[in-house]
Image (cartoon, rainbow, N blue to C red; front, side, top):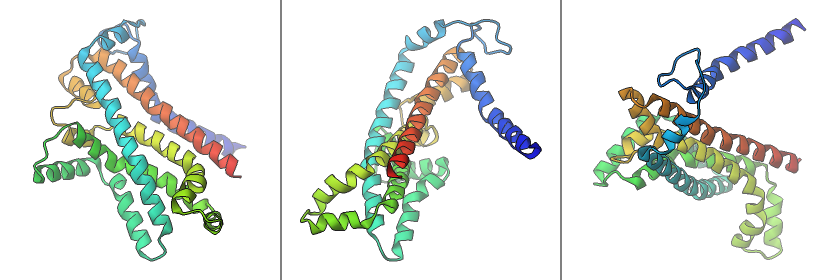
Length: 261
């Protein structure tokens, strides 16, 4: 019993270490004081109204949502195709290709951002909305790929072979057999990719040009020490836009796992 108590104590300490700063930032978003201070003297909601009325914040929020949606859409297509291609491979190159696909998520974001900026400069491509989308898609693809390849490895090959024996071509087999069984993994990967893209700041810094996404607005406001109450409100919004998709993806994965069993 004592060892079990120590384990729960360690788990509680880790959770407090990880999430206490997040909780404090959320509480600051409701603080009435113009400068964050602890303990909080009083609570107010007017900072939410002021933040929403800020044109820069609204423009940054809209751009972040657009980029996250576009990057996620690209990742769903490319990640699914990559997973299906790797799942069909039988040679030793399968592991090499899988490693190459997974590499962008393992590299530090600053390296990816610098590499993309150099590549765009080499091609004489001006930094714009589409360069941000391309930059975000590089790591969003990995998230979708991981989810889909894991599902494909659990799918019995006999289902595809049976579909072919019944006369279905590759497209109909994909649409009627594989896609329905992969749908939950694609959806879960898309939700995780959206969450990761929405709050990405390092890659965005190198690929944004004059564009100003929500994480970049936060970085600039903190660096200048201005609009700190609005920063807390925006951080609270970013946390919501990040946590909710992650929770939904976990539920989707859990439901799919129970259905498979």
